[in-house]
Image 1 (tube, rainbow, N blue to C red):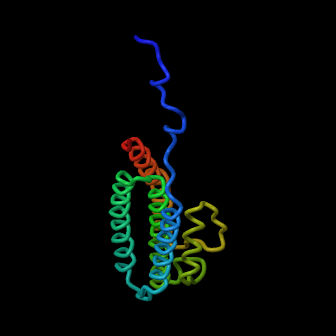
Image 2 (image 1 turned 60 degrees about the vertical axis):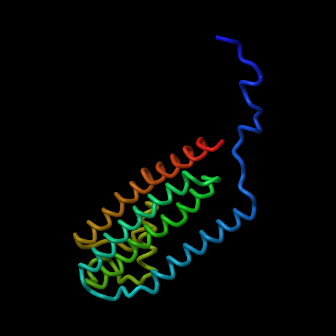
Image 3 (image 1 turned 30 degrees about the horizontal axis):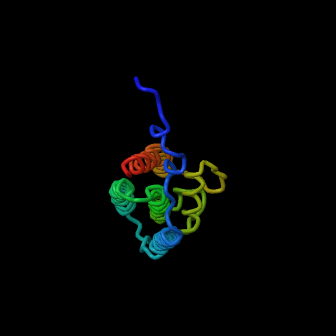
Length: 184
């Protein structure tokens, strides 16, 4: 085996990841902020006042399917992006709020179906607050699931939280690594 030379190891600065230009970072931040704001606006504007169990199940099922499709497309965009790290931040900043708002919407509808599902009546803000406390595992205990159905949905959210945090982030980070290694 021939001895290693300096040409075998490129200089440290050529191995470093290229940083995106400031204008791209700003555009990405604006796009991310706009997406999150649009999702929250849609959440507050959706007509969730119906009191049918099938509406809650349909909202959650369609939403989770759309979330999976969105993450799939985002992983593809990360792979082909010249700045996969920046694209990954955008992906997380869109996917996580969508995920949380899906469960918050479901909780609003469940509360309309039966006021006994939770320990207190839920406004949209209360439902979002409850969703975030479950997601972050803080669980203050001020709002609790009271019925078996509500507890099953909250348990489903807890399991989905673990999947989002585990597999979702792993897929996005893996796509960033693969995207970076595919670049010259």
